[in-house]
Amino acid sequence: MNKGKLRAGFTVLELVIVLSILVILAGLVLQVMPNLLARTHLAQCSDTIAEINKAWNRSYVLNVRYPDAYDSLLDDTQAVSADLLSDHLIDQTAAATLNAGEVDALAAIGIRYLVDGAVDASNTFDYAPYGTASRLLVDTAPILELDLVEHLADGNELNLKRHLVREADGTFTDNSANTRYFVFGIGPNCTGVGPGKLIQEAPVHFAANDELNPASIYQRFLVIFSIVYDDDHDEYVAYFETAAGNDHHGPTSVGHHLEHFHEGSNNDG
Image (cartoon, rainbow, N blue to C red; front, top):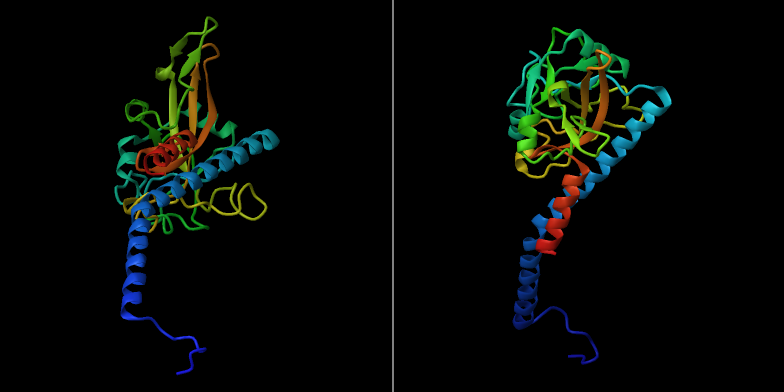
């Protein structure tokens, strides 16, 4: 044998050592992988929520209105469907109607139409494809209202404040009786979505777990609007509150995602 020639292959002992090292490394990777995936979800969602907030606020500054034609999050019968929404989102919301003053308040900031789910829609991608007809927002048809009591009981993940009125002495008055919050989805039919619009495509919410897989449940980002009855002027005023994630806690804010991101960093490195 030519001693100057390199030996090809491994001995049995060398193979055992290499395979043992690979098994150990694989075990380490499997231990940290769930945490890495969870933190990726939290970071990606935080960034998307912040970008939507920035785009929506810019739209109002430039056009004095917000995008229109959101996903109603209701099915084709205009009802809440367990086949479409997560359990927590269902627990924190209910189909409700508006009065004429509330309809006018939303129209004043640009919201006149909603898009219901297509027949037999059961996930993000078949909910309401681009070209699905929208319906005029009227006081006889339901929209999805956030149950403030349920949401606050679940930790106020959106950090809602519109119902709290700051007084001159620094105290707060609870104005929940005159404040309503509503939840919509940013789908492909939204007027803020598309070439040359605020965002190029309707973003899909990065699933936190298998239960929130976009292929089996509605997982687009949400927007929250409020309507407040002004006692002094006897009128209704609508406001954009925030974009939101569509998580296993229900609608969630940037703060919620960042809190859990850093908790995961502290717990698992």
